[in-house]
Length: 502
Image 1 (cartoon, one colour):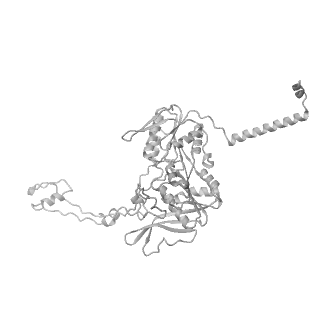
Image 2 (spheres, helix red, strand yellow; image 1 turned 30 degrees about the horizontal axis):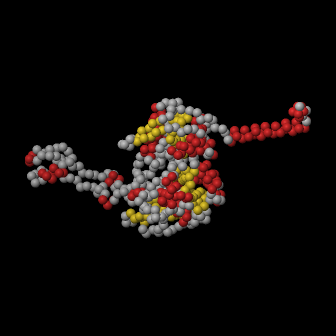
Image 3 (cartoon, rainbow, N blue to C red; image 1 turned 180 degrees about the horizontal axis):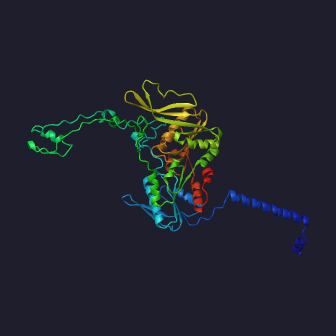
């Protein structure tokens, strides 16, 4: 009876209030759904997908699977006693979308061969599509000559930590050969015909190298020259071979031909059966042209830009610096997005000056252009090869942020930091996408003028973090890679990741 009395005759005013309240709640829920649909889209269920991990960076693959909320596939990699790689895929990949995560770090050749065998194994097991996920693409950046510390001045593992300072600079590479002992410097005298005799038979036999004629007279048997042409030089470049420095360049700047492995690596991946590739910050974006399959080159620019905004104090007044001319476009894009100033460091490794000319090391030109000599060595009697760096921009009493895509031996970035500190920079940050830190690079950075190094986990940073400690900060790129994998698997667009990240 109480229930009927309470609800049988409702008040008109309270009814209007309740209806308005319900409508308001409905509109609020509707707005929440619309907001969630556009800004927090619910990911589609991940079906028929397998994520496998190579031996180069298993932790990154685990993070990607955690973001995708899928179980990581089981891939067993073994090595025989002779070094050959054996791959066993212990999950079914038939008619599934397979993603193999393998970064180009560590033992690069072994890891790349492991990736090729894993791709071929998945295609043999009737996988619907195989995508190679290479956060750091191998062989996309190579020096002009093979790594040799004695030639290129790269840091050596034999240098002790307590004896190393960032003031140390390797000497400018010397020519690979000595012109004083050049066998082509002079034309050899022509051989003259000699009459065979008993006394000269031994000499004739030792000098006979031009034809197969034999002299039957005089009791002498063997090959002797019947005709010796006189050497006539018609091209001076054929005998006057210029000296070549450790970077394969002559004085005119011509660089000797060096094998570029971009086409070979692309053909190996395609031949193994890769249907698509995902990578991040290629050293040269034109590298994608070597492939006949789609290549998604993700950018770390949104991640680095967000770090600058959140963790660098007064970032509006900082200076974005490119350590070399090759990375100027990458640094200027971040500087334009943030509205910051830009500076450039230009390297001239083989600048030639005479002994009588004024030294470039002691002349610092007026700002914003400053020339700084980093190392020198005498070649010959009249010239000196000086490695100079030129700073274009104003950095005095300002925070500098070095932007680069890859740090290997860290020679370039440490010399750039020293030049910035010499010109009055207040603090130097180094933001790099791929921190390889090979050789003695961690020790070099720990003794350098860099205040903080920020890199990503596209390469394992466990050993580097143990040396640098608080000087190193690692950003996680697994969310970006996971979102790219999810969008590719569901047939969605990946273009938004280029500008907005994830």
